[in-house]
Image (cartoon, rainbow, N blue to C red; front, side, top):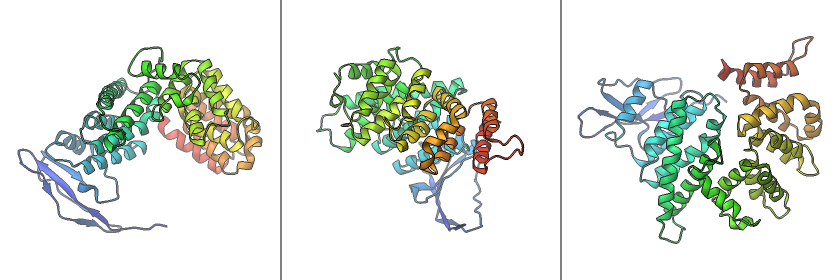
Length: 379
């Protein structure tokens, strides 16, 4: 609706050798207006939105970013400000304005913080970027190194913190400790290429899975996601065991979602194809659930499943459309998700060849927009 607001701006700056950071007075950016704030010296750093009072995202130039990170201690960022910086960075990385290295840099710095509010945000951020990291085939080696360092460091820290719990396990601190361990287990398992390697938390997840004796109650609720992730990638037999749990009529909706997400993480091509075939059979999986699993989980889980999903859609689109056409707008959403994971210009051309009229060159406007969006990261 083109609504515009007055935006409240408050910031803090720090100049080298100053004892305390300086806090600005409240300033406003008017609709259709702008605000110019001079930096007094080359060695002055700035943090915008101190105390996190404004609902906006701040993007820093590379120069200002380096100063902010170098001066993070003397700027005396509060718990709230560190959370704001985390979330702003996540949004800008996700939108393509920042490289992923900036978020990894923050995680490496703040995830060792002793403030549990900051720790919780740090581990929430780790969870949100995990799928992005898994999908990046061409991730620079330095970024991969940063990510593995963060994973290893946080797993060890989380494990030590959890083992140090002395209360009844109901406190906020205990919750964050368990959340840290669960998330880190999950990420170590889904990011490491070889589940046979006894690294990080693979041994622990394997032990929990093998001792379950067919009873899901043996697996703690916070450990289910990483343990199921391990099982999905361990072998086709273990994947089949997860499937049996999924179709069990006693499994709750929440349990089914965990299982559906985990099963999509297999990198075995035959198993991925089998999973898709199950989703196309409405005597096994409800139509609404089947298309949701194919689009939200399988197509986005990793580069292998993304490629299998694309090839399946291109080869079987009439059958897919006929099977799911009663779901209305869900079909375009499925197409959009599959196209968004394309990793090569050749595959993108296959989509255009499939959906473009050979005589008129016409392509559905929605699919054309999806292809244009997928082209941007390939340029």
